[in-house]
Image (cartoon, rainbow, N blue to C red):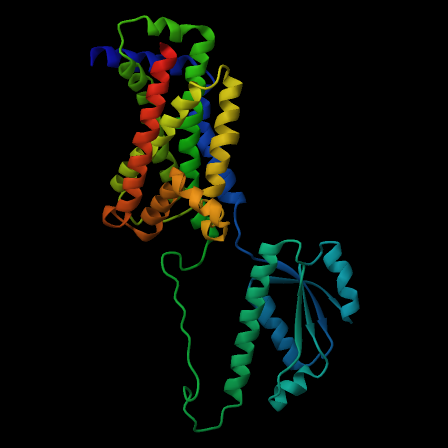
Length: 374
């Protein structure tokens, strides 16, 4: 233990002397959180809308007020006919057009189905889809109000119809930020405990200090553990830092136990530390270590893990490959602990998966590192 402690102290002193490493570990996570937290927001609000009201009746004006009063659509212009809509969408001045056909008011008064058309700019599929969904909800509400107005006096309000009362659990306002912001923790940990350790070990190769350590009485496991332990501690500190910012700055609830999150984070770090160690045995320069970690490991793991894109929407082959990606299980841990308040009684499959993958990767990386020293 004395030799192990000496290696840990040596690594901490070396990190302190590196003027670039400490800012990357502290400022980097904060920049990532702010960038993703404020920029990655799929909630649609204030959609610019152009109006074509060919009826100009009180009923059509009431429908327009439904759209503008919801806070989702902003009326940016009006035209006399549908032919004038195209320039608005082509030039990007509007994302959606509401066309109210002539005779809308008469149809509403007579109890007939009025003609209304919604045209959306499909170049932004996400915003267009959500905008059309909000428009459909508004039109459905207007239709329900028309049906209620035509109901025969004395008839039961619930006769012959069903009443749907939707409820959304865990994220009642459907804030996309609550879905994306916890994922920053996973990306920060991969930066701190996979990319930076690999670069630090390769840097020692370049300057020759790793060879000097190999001729000391240190055992290989002491050298491996001594080099990875400081990054493990820094990873846990970064997890606490980002968790505090996520809950305090973006008001994402932490409904679960912080101890549960810390324990499962420790299991996840076994994998990232092992991958960083493995990369250091495969490359010769820091640039190679950076490229291999980012483009071969980090980016594919983010894409295939479900942090950003749902795994269920991927081809079958990619879905099968995702089972070998530890970030997939850690993403379930983050959203389970933060939003659902899940504990180990629910997340034990993810814990076992992280433990199994972490021990396997760390063992292979340690054997490879020992062989490279010999």
